[in-house]
Length: 114
Image (cartoon, rainbow, N blue to C red; front, side):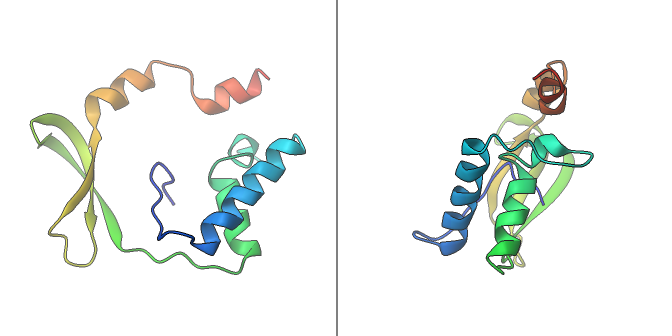
């Protein structure tokens, strides 16, 4: 699950469950467990736990396509398209931005310094 972008209909109960989980984790100063404990606080670990507790299975109506080239005149290394038609690009992955972020500290590295 790639959680860089989430989309839902207004007042979606699953989103409320995710928000409650993240707020609870922060208030309790919960730091997670396991190999990627840093992702359990507000990231995909919290999202996965909230959805599991709510007994909710996300619907996937889009697909990530990796490529190297241009998208709308910008350097791109991927895009998210509607699924199953794959006729509409919903968002692009800016490769220049990805390269610039690779030089900075990763979330996991910052978490270890806490």
